[in-house]
Image 1 (cartoon, rainbow, N blue to C red):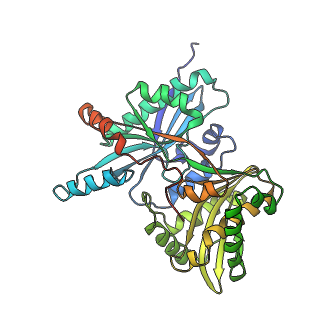
Image 2 (image 1 turned 45 degrees about the horizontal axis):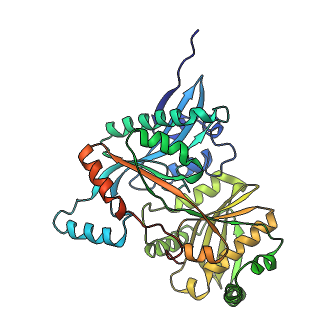
Image 3 (image 1 turned 60 degrees about the horizontal axis):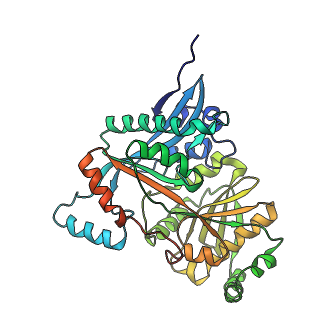
Length: 375
């Protein structure tokens, strides 16, 4: 019997693929099946979820999450780009809002592409191209004109460049993620690796610890309303706003992931003033969302208190890296992190518009290096 060639399909729920098949492409991934299922169940408004998979011989050999949404093109523009869009919208309110299909998830650290361990590296670009083409077909059927790939990590740049650019995608700089390598024995060793000025500043800021009660929890029952309030205050201060999370996201991730998820809560007296949703495995502590009260959070230096709390958790649990995600790069570099690059890719199904997007690419978000963002 001749070999059956690989086939790609796109489905609306990750349950249609199944945990075993999905996680076979993401062995050990923190943001694997359980995490994505929790995101899907969280009721995030405006997102129509999709999951693309390539199968061969009855097994998944590549997979990635995706979504369809109405996308405002000024979401990731520079200040100049936003001003141009704002001026245009005075004449045409719906200008620069398009139906977009994006490979990746708004709630993951990168695009979330996975390959089976049995798939040889020399086949990955061809399989990825097949996955992209299936996703594009589903996008066209849903009326999506703008196609995007979110935060493809630099370690996979060669595969993405070959597969995505072969079918007309244009590259643009994505937002890097920050990580701190835990190569010190204790907090004193960590502080010793920072600059003298930073050490002095951190010791001063950490005096706020005496005003706080800090707990590690895995259940937010009874705190849902306050958690959502703190999230909304934090979101209102953010430069880049895309997804709008629900309380069910935070409680659902904790419920779905068991010991791989935890939440650090920060109390000032009887008032919850901050919280930090974290994921963990035997190697990495992944900082998903840190939220704090707009008034008391900065006064209590809560961002820096939470940073050192997370470093302490890494040390106590024998973890090797603290991944603190995107934005607030100036603080993260100052505190010893390094940046891991990422690329975006995009194209429009109309060739003339696609050429216009190529021209507009320099107006996309600047490389968000040290000067960008602050907690």
